[in-house]
Length: 169
Image (tube, rainbow, N blue to C red; front, side, top):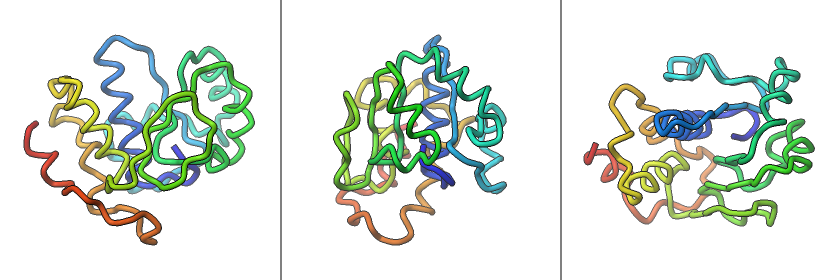
């Protein structure tokens, strides 16, 4: 997620975290910086490592990573002081993002600026993979970004409705 994460960055990261855990994978969410108190209600938020305030713990978690999911940012520089660590990591970097013009810094990924939010993309990815059974009503993180999409309108308006992806769960 990007520095000073918003609801989409935190929500999409925690949604993927919960999915990976349910599938038996070890996953850690690391935020490049602190995040607002109003996001701390999200299930799993208490496990998020703040790279700036818990640097050694974050570096230890990143050291053993095989994959680094880069959610809700299109340029590694948006991770502030975490950027050099991500760039030097031997882990495979996977982008999932809705912002336009991603940098060529990721081995794999999808960038879709017609999506209203990265969390929408995570939901659609799981749904299309037939994995929607892992999305349950106890972790509403996937739904959080809908009322708080990119406020500066730097992302083009969505071409598909956000609300249609909510009902199937």
